[in-house]
Amino acid sequence: MGARILGIASAVPSTVVTNHDLERLVDTSDEWITTRTGIKERRHLKKGEDCSDMVAQAASQAIERAGLTPADIDVMIVGTATPDTVFPSTACWAQPKVGLGTIPVLDISAACSGFLYGYQLADSLIASGRARHVLVVGAEALSRVMNWHDRTTCVLFGDGAGAAVIGPGDHEKDGLLASSWGADGRLASLLWQPAGGTRHPATEATVAEQMHTVHMAGNEVFKHAVRAMKQAVGEVLEKAGLTNGEIDLFVPHQANVRIIKATADRARVPMEKTYLVIHKYGNVSAASIPMALADAYEEGRLERGDLVLSASFGAGFTWAATLYRW
Image (cartoon, rainbow, N blue to C red; front, side, top):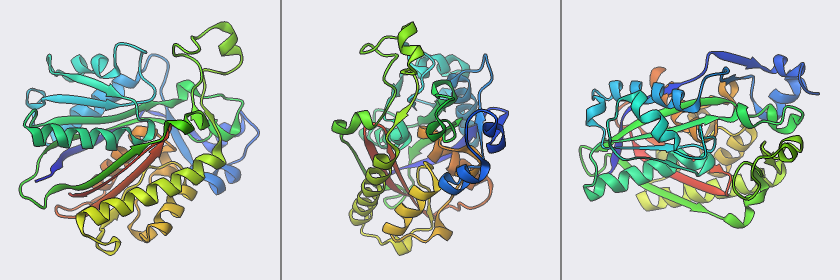
């Protein structure tokens, strides 16, 4: 009996940044961004707003939609690459905002794979009897780590959070049916934020050199992302003894539309079964899959019993896939 999603919700800042807004900041255009990424707009936090604020908002709504209260949550896992502070964790900052008492809470740093990593950890906690209800959140404040002179990265990313309450399924073929995850740290420097940690502590020099912002080798990331997600999708389908033709909805990480289409094509999942929110949120890293699930739920695209496939790829490199019964 796999752990299933009992409640799903998202939270985004109120500030909308369009491609036309970015035309005034860098040498780019709406056509250039849309053609290459599929992104039309993204959300940015205002000054004084934190990643943990979005965590709390999404988490509180997910708990309500699950028909539970904060007192019913046993553990909270937050996947983020853009924490409020190096320490303590964003989960700790969010904990009192949600009213979670003194339960264990933690961050995991798996970049864009953070939510699917968290879902698999939640499944293990529930299966072992260590927890009954686990709150898994993906949240990012990527606008805070952008180089606003680099058009290859600053147009891609946005801010937001998505949260899911994970609990036990009702029967053997309910909830999480199969999962896969992996990482390859040999490729870490192809997508990273060089400064701000203990290797390169923040100094005037690191800030002047934009070392505290996202650095990405885009072509290499594309190649590895498509390959890894295709492999992970194949693994979960094989484990579950199912075929891609049985999938009701494919909800992948929303990196850019070219990666999504290439992954869907190689996994032989038709685009009409592939759910997209990249156009309105951009790449929100760990938050992208739960945010997409929340939108799909609100639009009526998800019905009880639907077979849902998700796959992700992110910095590290990390990757994951899940196959679950809604």
